[in-house]
Image (cartoon, rainbow, N blue to C red):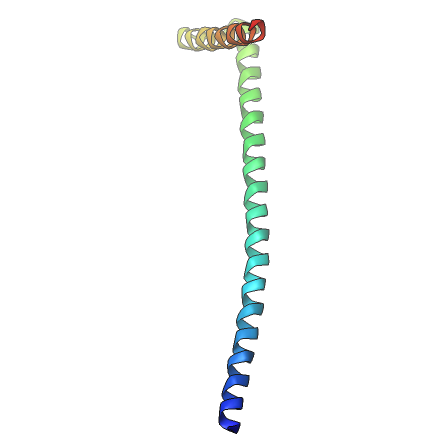
Length: 95
């Protein structure tokens, strides 16, 4: 009978250890998910900042009138995209 009780006690101890490990891993998983989300947000912010800086470079180039033909075409394409987006927004606001 003592052997059975010892065996049950060992199983219970191991279950407790597993439960503690599981809870610890859940906390670490949550922390890592939050860290991933934070890094994604930082990445989005950096991309937005990069886009703003590229726009500023284009504006500076146009103000100095030192644009190549390719740069002018790209600038016009970008302006046309903005105009289309603005038109879509206006259309959505009217509805």
